[in-house]
Amino acid sequence: MYLKMHPNIIYIDCHDLGDWLGCYDRSYLNTPNLDQLAAEGARFDQYISTAPICMPSRAGIYTGQMPHCVGVHGQFSMQAGAVCMAEWFTRGGYESILVGSAKMHNTPTDLGFQSQVDVPDHSTLASTAVHWIQDQGANRSQPFFVSISFNDVHRPFGNHYEAALPDQLTVPPYLPDCAIVRRDLATLHRAIEGLDAQVGQILNAVKSAGQEENTLIVFTTEHGPAIGRAKHTLYDSGLRCALLIKYPRFVDAGRVYGELLSNLDLLPTLLDLAGVDIPDEHRDRLHGRTFANLLADQEYVERSAVFAEHSWGRRAGLYHHTPSRAVRTKEYKYIRNFTDTPPYIDTDWLARFGPQRQLPQSHFGHPAPEEELYDLSVDPHELNNVAMLPEHKTTCHQLRHQLTGFLNRTNDPILDGPIPHPKGLPDVPLWEKQPDGSFWLRRYREEESGEGWIDD
Image 1 (cartoon, rainbow, N blue to C red):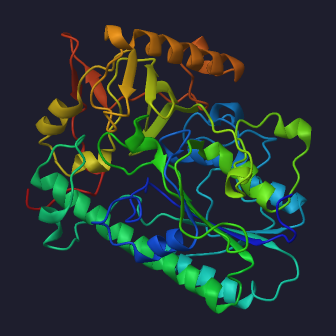
Image 2: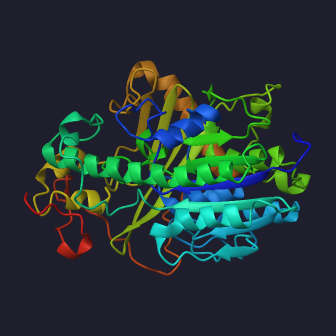
């Protein structure tokens, strides 16, 4: 137990944000409230998700176990018997409250929440949370765990953006730099600004309620943004996430941690910080490792690697099975692809191009190699696969062995072949393989998305 008192805990997350905040060396993003949260608390720069889509990643966050270990191979329900974050806090004497939705197929009760605050319109999520904090959270004798999940950065983004921004923003090198992409990123920036404003309301409510000193605030996300070569992929653009933690009584303000962390580590860490015990027999089953000692400046052994997985994805009501697994160290990323289908691209992002898909097709339509290896020290955007180079043979072999060992230890079903859809639904790939081995994007269907541009 690290704290003499059980702090109130406000857990805030957001869909599809990655680490796209100003405080993560993205000065072109206007996120003053979350930047201030980072300044008043701690920021974690190497916080890596276990999956590049929402439900598997959230399953990992909530349980501290790899998604495949709790049956979440895609947009699926968590298997019965999985003990989640809210349940652990409830068992530890907390009142656990869900404001809005948990963004899982499981019911709030399944996830361990004692009560749910209804939010009929997502646009009122922040104000509903503010009302609860000010009206009910201020004078409670029992500590509370409150979960608030935003979807402001989830598509569709719409067509509104600041006119000057497309020419000013930075286009990641893994995307084609063209007018359509720049305008799309500008709408993403607008969505991020809206999120920041809503989180700011909650942070101000905690202060005005006089609860700042006794409240542990967490802000995070579950994977990267819904743009090309990010969400749905095991590249860092799909896995690197923001994590900000503020607790004035324990966490030093302004600290920046560069240690390698998995989002599986958040559950055991929060429970340790709150003095909530996990029985040894269950803690031994967790794949997450507490980093409470790191925050306490006590002896801490950093992770040597984190792992990630992707099996089934879904967009526009269609499921696709493009299984891949990855191991990431501080220096390298190794990816094993179990199909040669190119990584899935968010269909809403593709819809920006309308039926003229030649550019994204030529940019991303390369067959996936069986193995990928990236030297992150010189290639942080993972653009140069060095798996076949002689000078990286030893590293490739070591990481292949490490990943295979982990898949075996955790009984990952991908080792037995393709993972069937739990409802027997078919695999409808976005990419269609041609006789010559190349891949073409599936024919554009107008009903797939409402994200098209009118004037292009």
